[in-house]
Image: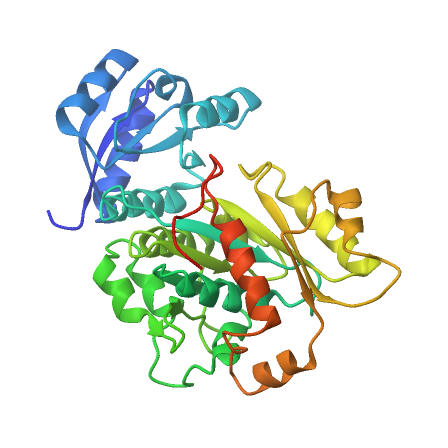
Length: 365
């Protein structure tokens, strides 16, 4: 059965296990290859069958090594204990049965896609601006170009599916270019070939996965996260352009980010909006991995040094105000690779791509 996820099911209540098994089999996206009633049976089934996904009660999953399988927690009621157990087990999702059964089927289908990645994963850097007009698109596009100047294979993903400003900023064609919306229906069988065919190549040496040209094309959170997962198997660095509003779709994409850059302008409203945005993503695994970029800096009552006072970290880059930036963006062009701002982005790329142990990516800027 090609393009069908193989599942091991671990639920103690027999009737619930029967319901889940029959539902998954009928979905056409999965096939239950084994069931387990305790952690010993589960460990043996995983060892022998190496399934794409393991679905089980959180309490059963915490003591079992699932190897390369996607772990999905299912319970008939939600409690603090079950949620904590799911997190401790490393589950990729928590689903209430039967209320969340459709979402469960989608997650199981994505587990088959996970096997496409084969362990290769790019560095994923999310770029976000909590206040409109701070220059999130400007930073995301030019950071990707700076990564290309470091001889890195970079892909810019426009996760702002409502506005799609990246296409305009890069001067991408209005027609004949694939977008995230073209990949979303394929999440159950998405491959590297699908993604590579959908990427648009910019003359600066990087590729981009653009947002749909109209807001009517819908992409949900799980679909976007799956697309980002597969994109990250096709390159060395992914720059994720986030929308201002960190809705459920944006947060789903953010879950796999290795770090985030918060773009600020030197005013109170920008600082306040950024503070609220960071509070909203406090539950993500980005503690200590959020950097700050000051854009359009010029003399004001608030100085770049205030970033450290308010947010506890000095900005990774301070980009000066330059009228040439607006003129370039209005014409769908990036700023020249040589110049003061370009050098700022080269330094930002070096800092943002630095590994956790303090070494950079080894490329010459």
